Length: 264
Image (cartoon, rainbow, N blue to C red; front, top):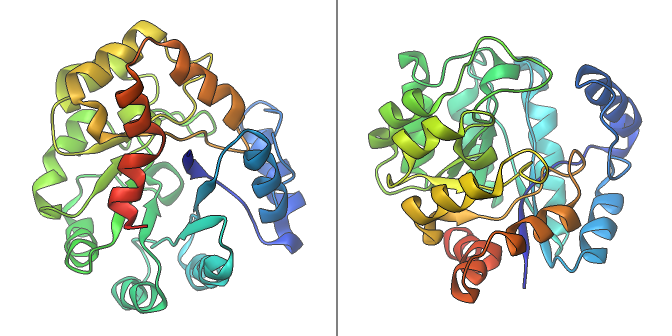
């Protein structure tokens, strides 16, 4: 079994535009699916993946409700686990957390670069506390974003500061804890309570560093992810298989940790 914990899809009516805009901002990155949920599911299934966590992002306060309506609409799809999103500048952010929880959503995605906040700003703390109290998993984009490289809104050093707020509710740092900041991940985050997902590692993260981070952090806190459509699930699977982990460690990474925190 394999669960891809980090994927993206868009409502059909905006999928073409969303893919084109995001691809252009990242140097015309070639997308690995067309942007629709149907295309995403087809592609991950072809890679031997059983289920995908779809991470939705509200890039402005006005978007928040529509983004979450789309996430809620995906709950009936047995092949995906949709996450909602909260925008920190929305006056309805806390109310929206309640709505997501009541609908059956298991977590939220926050993207400091697109949402213009430093991860350890105190104005975010009430959102973090409420998400934790409701038992919602919180996923952060971590490290550099190719489309918005500066400033570094979410570094390992900033992430470690906020972990106590979440208590025992899972927090996930995408891109192995900080895209292009892997030495900082190794020295700061590795060994802490946070989960790291492996998204966008293929051809970007040196295998030696990946193995060092996993060994120090513990395979029981690593989640397999691809970042589809920006990296192919098949390639990301091969990357994890190539770095010299044990069968037990790969099972933890590919599905056991995900089924544990998603309670599926």
